[in-house]
Length: 119
Image (cartoon, rainbow, N blue to C red; front, side, top):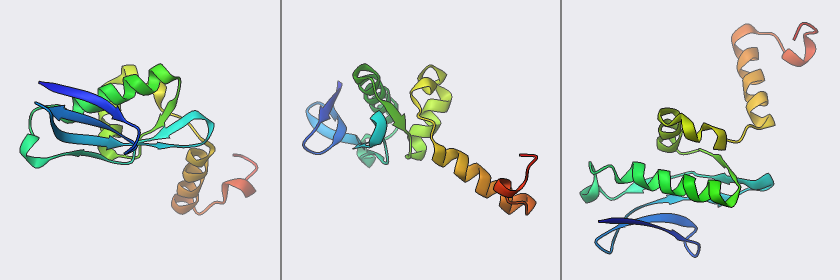
């Protein structure tokens, strides 16, 4: 049986199977009530059991319950949220996203968005 706990000393959510640490999601408390989730780890011997999804769901439920938003830096967390759209409202939007989009636009079009009056 799997159990998810929040380990504030290690700054991570952990999943235990029969009392043994099977995996974790690291978190970082950022500015403006945003919690970054940079890494999800499940020990290899516990793989293939759906523990990562269970762990991410529990972490996001806890974060929602505390009233925070998330920055899903971990590719697994990002994919999990895209497959579970009921959690999409937890994803923080930021000016950094806008800046990244502008940089990409300039790379693709060769036009500096800040200098183009049409944008």
